[in-house]
Amino acid sequence: MKAWAARDRRAIWHPYTQMHTADPPLVIARGEGAYLIAEDGRRYLDGISSWWTNLHGHAHPAIAARIAAQAAALEHVIFAGCTHAPAIELAERLLAILPKNQARIFYSDDGSTAVETALKMALQYWAQRGDARGEARGEARRRFVALRGAYHGDTFGAMSVSDRGAFARPFEDLLFETAFIELPSGARLGQARADLERELAKGGVAAFIFEPLLQGAAGFRTYPAAALDELIALARRHGALAIADEVLTGFGRTGKLFAADHLREAPDIVCMSKGLTGGAMALGATSCTNEIFEAFLSEDRRRAFLHGHSYSGNPIACAAALASLDLLLAAECRERIAMIARSHAEFARRARGHARVREARSLGTALALELELHAAGDESYFAEIGPRLARFYLERGILLRPLGNVAYTLPPYCVTEAELHRIYDVIEESLERV
Image (cartoon, rainbow, N blue to C red; front, side, top):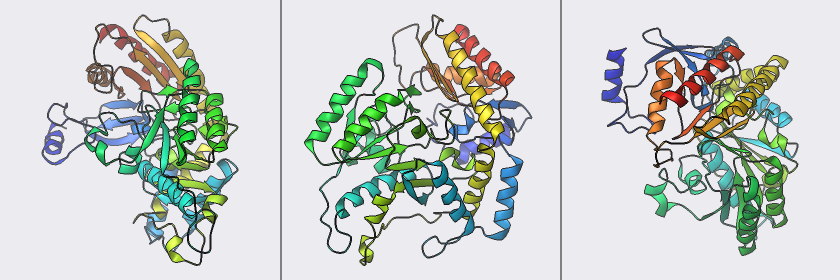
């Protein structure tokens, strides 16, 4: 194991990692259900679903078999001018479970590219709206509104609608204009409403983009569906589109198939990735309404949506997603999601009484504890307590990756109640010892 780690350090540049000071990476040989198994045989309970992607457990035999069968039949084909059964079937099945106003699926590679697709789609929609036959006479809408603390990805469009913190700071002068409004949580709803009203009144807003109900990278912050409904309705009254970034929240994470299922106001565009394939393959998808799709129809080929990726609609990834959907829609999986949600809510209630817990929150299969620090200091993503907590958890066989002073878990749906309590016990132990 040490040999592999040393070779890694000589050849690999890891994401979100300060390579000068980082601990040696954990060398994983294989996965089995909710566990990752290291090269030395030690088992680690994957409490974060390997960056929120894994729904049903590692190396799931049904997904692996579907991938193998598809790889033996067709590994890839250009998706401009060609199509194939897995992409068609997946699009049909997604549209059957998405909000009823969604009519088309556009495939891409991952969460960032699903968001980039949505942003370009919204901008071109407004540029072409109103005349499908000749020169565009659309409204001049080129601005976006997003929530403070937003994270939508690391490509330039996605960074532009994400919070302008340390992740985006080196590139800030290259990002396009976005207005940020308050997160509509509790007493801040009034401020969020006023912020949005002010930006919409200025004119030129193409879309309001949001992570519905749950902001992952911001520390698993939650806010109520009724508040988001109010903001979407306000944006709609001013003609702006609503883009739901369901990259994290989709496929059961909030207790329903999509976070949008908690809402009365359906989004115009939905971005999907992460759990789409059950964590087995990279795949992104962006859905939209028929009204948006029809704005691109013309005798003029230049009015098409001139956007795509080499691996758009990859057959193997689509096959993995179909297998994952089979598992997700089974009654057993829905029961497991409900069990995780109940267990998280119960632990959050108990943790709120701890002196070192500033706030404990849960939504569906997501649980987060925001910790009080003994001394004043940086409570951002770069808080030094984060790496110390991560080491503490790893030493006890649990893979968690705290966001600064926010310890969270988002386990795969195959996790047992006993394994959940093992995660809770280790988190509680860390409150006293780290």
